[in-house]
Image (cartoon, rainbow, N blue to C red; front, side, top):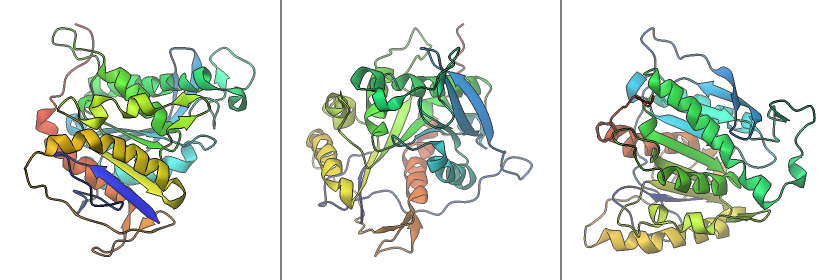
Length: 309
């Protein structure tokens, strides 16, 4: 059983445990001008603390209107577990997707000048928390693509699996703390987040403060769209995160009637079945959600060259 809690804009109110909104829609296969999907690339990144990262990059197809997506795998997994999703989001929606092997995983096993493999089994709080620099390195790569006119970094979306949801939340709070420098934006680029089987604590790294930040809860009067999706074994954690966010978001609702849809779902090899619709892939639900709440608002997120003037 898969439970999906979603927070679109305007913010929805709860309908029990099984919720989704703004997920109905057809999509066309995205193609570039020559009618072909750009081939994925292997890119090498270096973090601010010197870790050599391996990542897969799937270029987008809509140039300055392309939504960039960072996909973060679960702990003890690798980018391989997210490549099908990356390919689907690129092919069906034209998004530009980067999928890193997080440090100590997959092909990201060395410091830039190191000779020994990184040992993630020994890491605790501080070392695990340093993985947010991997997300920063991915964003820096996407900013380069933005400056080349290949995407719009101001529509950045993050999909994070399990423990990576903590890292994504902490990093997003940090990124939103960077105020513009004059007319030049330095951060505040994340416009949607999808958390799959999120955890609140992992090896001494606690995500509660980040999950309770006003940008997630709406207590500041604004919040961006979020999906919290959990299978049966993670439903307790997912519901706790959802409930904490909803406490502030309900206050934003006021008396305005919200349009919402209720889904009852079960997952079988990443296929989500709804009693109200035909069978749908979870990737399609993610893509539709981002399309409705980010891409369809692209005129609100002006493309900007991020190179220092």
